[in-house]
Amino acid sequence: MAHVKPTARLVALVPVLAVLTVAFAASAEARAPRSFFGIQAWTTPSKSEFRTIASARPGTYRFTLLWSVVEFQKGARNWGPMDEEVRGAAHNGMTPFPVLLGSPRFAAP
Image (cartoon, rainbow, N blue to C red; front, side, top):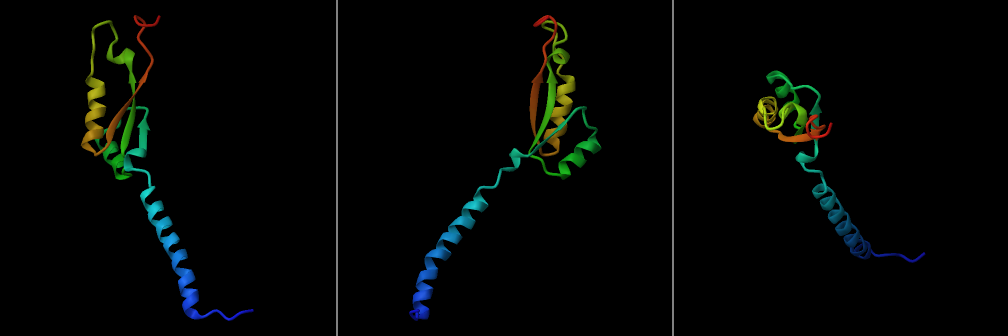
């Protein structure tokens, strides 16, 4: 077996270290943004529940937007319940993300 000088070993090690450095840097940048992580509630959380949810630092707050609740009668809209959820999420640092579900009887009997 041939004897390899220490400087030759070092020269061979430099490209390996460069590749590892690039790989670690790329993996650090590949993390999902905070907005990727979210939570969904089935009922409107109270103010204290919103604070508890926010402590987990989700980026989005998903909630069910029932069309039949907002527009129970054609042309008669009530955004009050949705406003409460949007306000609670935004006040606690989360982006509200409504998920539209269903339709009122006048739209699709």
